[in-house]
Image (cartoon, rainbow, N blue to C red; front, side, top):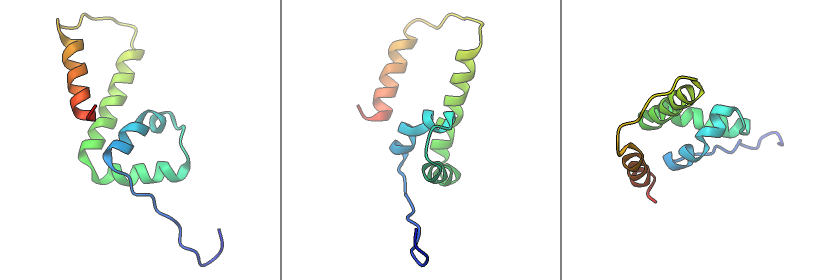
Length: 87
């Protein structure tokens, strides 16, 4: 980048952050995108909660213990995700 040129700042919306959350956790994103996500997370409680929840899910999946889910859980989860993600 030439001297005197301003650095481009990427402004992310929540859906963009959600699409990249797995890559963010894995550390598989460009430094500039990581910085933009971190700035967004610093000001967005909803996305911070999504990040925490995703990390918790990864932790639970990695746990070797098993447990039975309540009846209908999968259907309710799918419906909630479709509603939240607008699909």
